[in-house]
Amino acid sequence: MISEVQSKSPLISVIITTYNSAETLPTLFKSIKVQTYKKLEIIVVDNHSDDKTVGVSKQYTRKIWSWGPERSAQRNFGVSKSDGKYILILDSDMELQKNVISECVELAEKEQIKAIIIPERTVGQGFIQNIRKFEREMYEGDLTIELARFYSKKIFLEVGGFDERLTGPEDYDLFYRVSKKTKIGRINSYNSSKARISSSAYILHHEEGLTLTKLLQKKFYYANKGALYAEKHPELIKLQGTIIFRKSYLKNWKKFIQHPMTGLLFLGVRSLETIWAVAGFVSAVGLANFLKKLPSVFRP
Image (tube, rainbow, N blue to C red):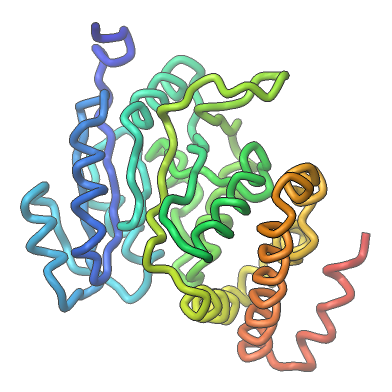
């Protein structure tokens, strides 16, 4: 049975950025094809891959472009090629549960919401994957960490899209700027008793290939590239930058008691990530500037 919202069928533009993503793309494409909401266009913006990414993409869409140099520029370019009323920004290692887009459209159309958070989960087996699952579960409902991936194209263009000077925290930068202009919605939300309203509208992150080494390298790279983000939003760094002292961990203290070994390993990994992030930041701004900015992070 087609809902009233579905019958109106605003076009949704799904923007996917890729780089050597041939292995993960089929899972994402298949999950898009089985969405309960059907009026979609898939736009792939590839950063000059040297594997079979483009060939895999051609099996699912004709709207494929090569663009760079980084993810922010790719995403803005993809939106410039889109025809949808709404855009959904995805990474190539994601998978959508079947009701993600339909719930976003229903909330956007009925409540006139222009930016919508879709809760996310980590999938995969292994040491780092278990740590990531443990961590991501604590962020559900935390609006200082969660961010929107579904936007009206109008609000996206109104704020100027992604800041192409940023790589890594560009999602948070866009979300923060949009949040100052419009109400934020969230699908698959919690009611007052913390009971899930829905269980089939998550974005799943496939992190099977993630190792501790890759995780730390990524943290260094994003911290190095994200120095400008700290300059733009020092108030957010107090909430997000102190990654081993986030309020979500205190709010979810019971998880650490219920899973003590995982909790200890998680804190150990987060401590290592903090060291690598600091190193990346220092490499970008210099030690003197880092020490100058450090007191403001911890100041109430």
